[in-house]
Length: 624
Ligand code: FAD
Image (cartoon, rainbow, N blue to C red; front, side, top):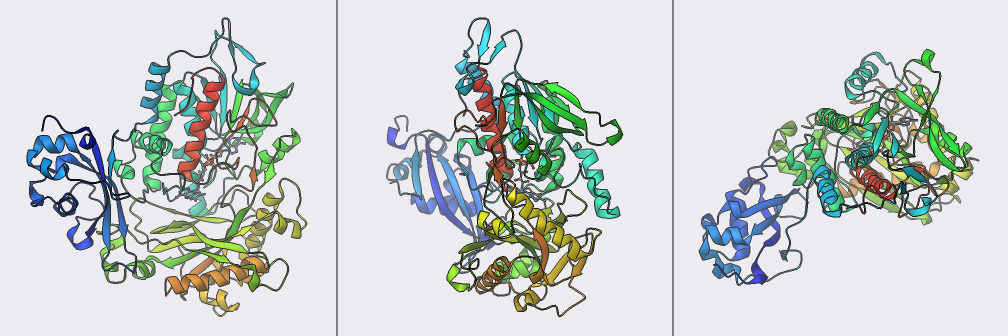
């Protein structure tokens, strides 16, 4: 045992280990069960599973697979096997380990265990190992494109981070850890007050235009579903660093293992409080209720921001605060600021996005669509199997259409699916309606909602005579205003049953119940969007029903409108330095700048931007 061959040393990763539901302890158990040991023993060809020491194995991913073509639904595991530990605890396993052959995607030898760690410790290590920073005597020279700008070494770089969504928080964290003098400026309120403002919206219909589902501490991701799924590579070092940082601030460790990690609003709120405390300890100045109205620009470089009190409008005399750099992390609902950026000739490029409706089914319907017989084991989030979700997509070929616009091929897909959640109002303006979905950690509500959205592009904006960099914003606004008018005001949302929508009729005036708290009104949603959106939705819903028979149901209700799926613009920036290509010292990041979509990708972008800015100011040599 003492001289294990190098080939076998270290960590082996065993993937696609399936344990049927009736033999698994259930979704909340993330350890190594006896049934899992039996599956591991099969792979190792080890004769007595119970002799394998569970301590030698770590579950790194657990997912639930209930696809219809499977004989039986099962939990699917990825497990890491520590060979040294295994041989120490069960020396007889050597005979089997020495026979183990790698199989791509199933059995893999990993010479190095995967690197992980929260950002604070990663930065600590970077500081220790990289030590020196690129400081010239007497001054700190800025790297990258900004070589002409110098700071006296006596002072730290003063950096404003505008917006406390995931991208702003992670940018602020990295910069503060590297010793910058950071001010985090947020137009909305801290989570305690924001919770009260959202409560007043739900109960008394009072929309605070500066403190709502989009604006406030934690950004748009706070009163959300808190899904942490991302398409940018679940196992990348950057995503792991973000996830581990969330764990450091109070997220359950299960998010590191769960195949579809999810937090829910009730877990996000305390997590954000801990994040705030950590930033304050690092010396970050946090200014809530403070809106950035303009940039201070001198000699083609941003030198600060003009701010006003976003709550007390009587106190709204603006102030000028000077900074060496401004990280702009304002999300995709900061429409007022987009206009300001244009006035400084900052380049904004319109970008394609997607618009549509939010569909809501009773959760029981989705459970039985996905799980059939297993549906009873969901038990409103307390059961053995996860509350069922779905993901559907359809590419509709333009050949189906007769009109020139309909001839364009489009995709329709589900987006931001919230099992056990509720439909919420994400408007930031009294005369507009747009909706999204949120949930709590247990996903215990009776409802399942998801956006069904259709891709739109510049050509579509032009057809409505909308031109220029903000054409996409105007396109969103147009349909948000139409939805508000169709609802009849007071944040009432226009809705239509899916069956009626498919037949283009309004047969019921009393619609099925909705989870949306501010009231719904029956309307023919065909009158909302241009035909190419409506028809693509119809074609796609019909295809989704073939995939999930029962998706078209009298109980399913479509809510109008879902428009803020991603940013309608992009602010070009340097790939290396993250600095705006049209204004020095400005760092556009996150979803609002067109570089992210979702909590994790926004956090990753903010983190990378933090490293880039720190590097540009000579605070570190490289990122992670
Ligand atoms: P944001 O989170 O939008 O943060 C921007 C911040 O900037 C805001 O706090 C805003 O108040 C502030 N700000 C704006 N303008 C100014 C200004 N002029 N001055 C000062 N401050 C300003 N994504 C997921 O991955 N999973 C989910 O489950 C999920 N659910 C969602 C549910 C809802 C209801 C909503 C609205 C979104 C959801 N999203 C979800 C999307 C996700 O929240 C966003 O992708 C993410 O928050 C973007 O992060 P960000 O930091 O780029 O911007």
